[in-house]
Image (cartoon, rainbow, N blue to C red; front, side):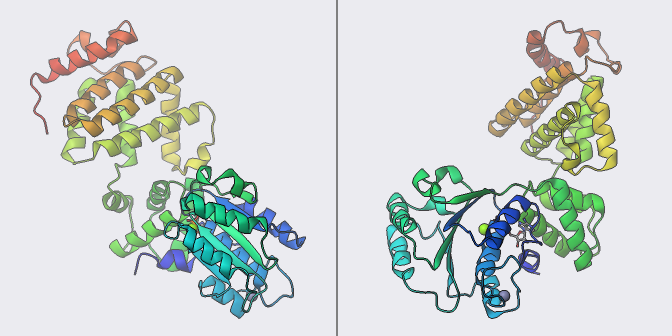
Length: 407
Ligand SMILES: Nc1ncnc2c1ncn2[C@@H]1O[C@H](COP(=O)(O)OP(=O)(O)O)[C@@H](O)[C@H]1O
Ligand SMILES: [Mg+2]
Ligand SMILES: [Zn+2]
C-alpha cells in the first residue's frame, strides 16, 4: 500500500461528505443555490483539513454536466465531475503557488484566462499556497482579479493567510478552515478502519488522532502506515513505537509523583524514561499538553474534544482537583523553559531531574501527604518561598546524586 491510498480513496466528493468545515460548505451551498458566487475565494487554514478538497467540490458544483446551472449536488458521474475529481480537466487548473511563484507564470495565466473554457461552464483556477507568489506576480494577479472574464473563477488556498497582500484579500471572499478535534479525527479513523477492515483497538485510533494534531489527512496517513506495519492488528504500543511517542499513561504517572512530592519515585521515573530511550524534547511537549489538559479540566473547558479515553478523563479530573491553578501555570512555564534548555544541553538528564524537583515543589503543596522522604529537608513542602525553590532544587540534585554520570 502506498502512503496515499486512503486519503485519495476517502477524499470527500460532495459538500455532504466534507467533515468539520460545515461553516464553509453551508455558505458555499447557499451562494450556489442563489447563483451568487464570488469571483475569487480564499481558503485559509492549516494543512490537511479540506481546502483542496473543497476547491474541487466547488469546481464540480459550478460545472457538473448533469445540470443546466451550478448545483450544490454535483453528480460525480458525468465527464466534468470525473475529470475534475481526477485533476484531469483542461478547464480546472491547479497551480502550485510554491513552485510557480514568478511573474512569468502569472502572465501565462493572464494569457490563458482570456479563452473560453474548452468544455465546461467555468474555468476554475485553483492556486495552492498562494502566499508564496512574488510581489510582481501578486501585482499581475491583482490586475486579473480587478477585471476577471465572466467565465473564470478563482480559488486561492493558503496555510499563511497573513502573508497574502491585503489588495488581494480585499478581492476575495475568505473562508477559514479549522483544525479537526482529536475526537472528530478519531471518529473518522474508526469509520475508515471499519470500511477497510483494518484491525485497530480504539485506544490506538485515539492515539493516532491525537498525533494528527488537527490535520485529518495526517490521521489517515498514519493509520495507513500502521495498517501496513501491523496487518494483524494495531495496538497503542504500535502507534507509540512507530511514531516514537511517549505513552500517555507515563504523563499521568509522572504528575501523580509530582503531586505526591515523591522525590525518590521521580528519580526512579527518570531512570525508566532514560532506560527506555525516550526523547526528552518529546517528553516535554507531551507533558505540556498533559498539564494543559489538566488546566482545561479545571477551567471547565471543552474536554470532550480532546479525544480522551474515559479512564484518562477520570484521572485528569483527579489531578485537576489536587493542584492549584497558579501552581499549574507556573509549572507549564517551567516545562516550556526546560524544553528550551533540553534542546541545547547535552546534560539532558540533569535538566530533567532538575525540572522534576522544581515541579514537585510547585505541585505537591496542595493536598496529598508527601511520600516518605529520607531527609526532611528534601520535602518540597518545607520550602518557604518559591524564589528559594530553584536553588534548593539544584542542591537536591547535588545531594542526591553526588557526581552525576551523564548519558
Ligand atoms: N474536512 C475534511 N473532511 C473529510 N476528509 C478530509 C477533510 N479534510 C481533509 N480530509 C482528508 O485529507 C485529505 C487531504 O485533504 P486536502 O483537501 O488535500 O487538505 P488541504 O488542501 O487542506 O491540505 C482528503 O483527501 C481527505 O482524505
Ligand atoms: Mg491542499
Ligand atoms: Zn457531474
